[in-house]
Picture 1 (cartoon, rainbow, N blue to C red):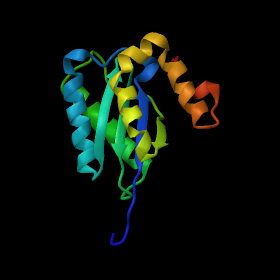
Picture 2 (picture 1 turned 90 degrees about the horizontal axis):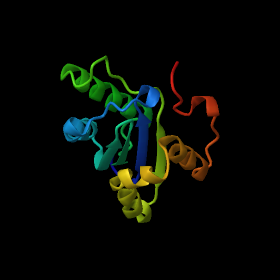
Picture 3 (picture 1 turned 135 degrees about the horizontal axis):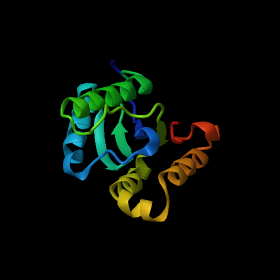
Picture 4 (picture 1 turned 90 degrees about the vertical axis):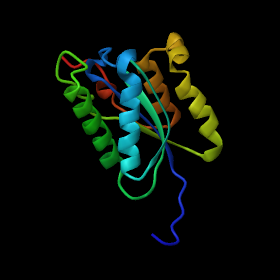
Length: 153
């Protein structure tokens, strides 16, 4: 697209169903590499990725060549297939429905990188649910408590 100039930085957050601790340290770096490849194959740039056992954070530079929902669908779908084909969990793996997508100015990127890099420290202070609600409130997003990554029964 000639004469199209954008700067779109998004943090994506999504969880494992029931917030089960399924993302293991033994293979999470390979998962990160796989997700990086998916993002790059869609024409976008992964800036940083990190996870806790029950959820994942990604910071991407997104090009305006596809919708965010389409990209997230492929990230979740492709990484689930990779986890299942490598039999990394005892049951069938899939990500929980939904995700958070939060936009940032270029000047905010170093702070977001630091935040994602230090997930283990962040979660000593607050739970994933507390963290996620803080994002929603900070970005002034209306939400229904019933759908905030609660345990699926």
